[in-house]
View: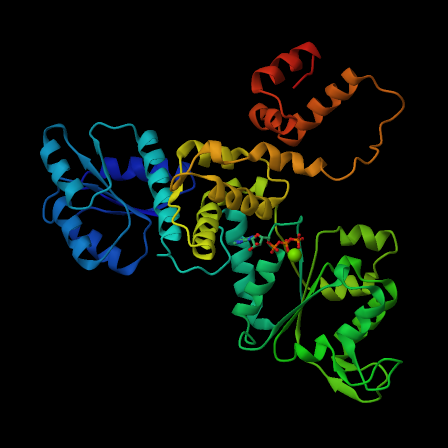
Length: 444
Ligand SMILES: Nc1ncnc2c1ncn2[C@@H]1O[C@H](COP(=O)(O)OP(=O)(O)OP(=O)(O)O)[C@@H](O)[C@H]1O
Ligand SMILES: [Mg+2]
């Protein structure tokens, strides 16, 4: 996020720049309307903060100019006490909001943040912003985006890790899209989903007569992905016997079809993904160390959604626009409390769970805006335990009270002492949690 601050008072420019920086928001400053024009032309800003009264080109003229030039970012006016009529004119001319001097810089920063967030969301819902399919402006996702752009053209093998539903396939497709083979095919295989006896022939193909039933030649995925990308999903499920063969392909860049003799060169870019801990599998002897190193040339780890909550609003908007299109609906967004609830939900199922929650809410809502009552977050949280109960390792016999105490300590630990989130995870109110912390004398 980058803000342009335009004010003739140096003091206001400095204070706002400092308060924005405290929130990690970048900003540039301009001391009059003319230099603001110049900067708006040469750089991209998410919002403009502008003084109404300035010598030379004043705030109102700047807003008119922006409108004529097609700039659409939010503009917040700073006006003096007596300028209310001018401020109202500014609102009519397209300003989004205004503050009256003297103002609280901290509140203004919050106002700017909210305005930019809701504008970005609206742009995505209305399809204004070009969708790349890879959404995320959090520091974590921006970092991943920059790694993708750096490594994609090189053709290097990449290993993507992350919990289920974090977007590993999205990242794999993004690598393909930015690569030099983006015009070529993107072939994906879910290693865990293909029966072991078919896996080898899927990957390598076979010659006619290679085995009973092989009544014609079959081209394998390594060959089909030539000139493009082969995405080996759930690589951690690869049987050991096949791992050595894959390693050989990666090293020699050729394959032999089953039952064949000819060596075929292959040049597919390999991207692998797993939600398992491959290092752990290596230690357990279930995954070959040499193959691990061969795949792990570039490692991209996608953090769980609950560790990058600032991505939730944009993802939510993107999902709404996607389902609006798919289901022919016209949902425009969320009520503030619905958005707040989404931002606070743990999302163990990550982006996929967010998608499911929103899709369901869109079907159930009566209006065009999704309200908190349309979101069924509780039941989506309970889904985790819908699978048959498995015995959990509990040392010796514990009383229910002991177990409750452990659960509370663990939840508080997981959420680094954040009681609101811990309570949500435990399925109790914050007040109940606080009284239980006292009851069990849990030290924090
Ligand atoms: N950054 C993102 N931007 C847009 N959509 C995303 C993003 N991350 C995930 N999604 C969406 O969430 C869903 C799950 O993503 P994806 O299939 O890539 O996850 P995954 O990590 O491969 O999960 P699994 O391990 O279960 O296969 C998809 O529908 C995808 O479109
Ligand atoms: Mg996947």
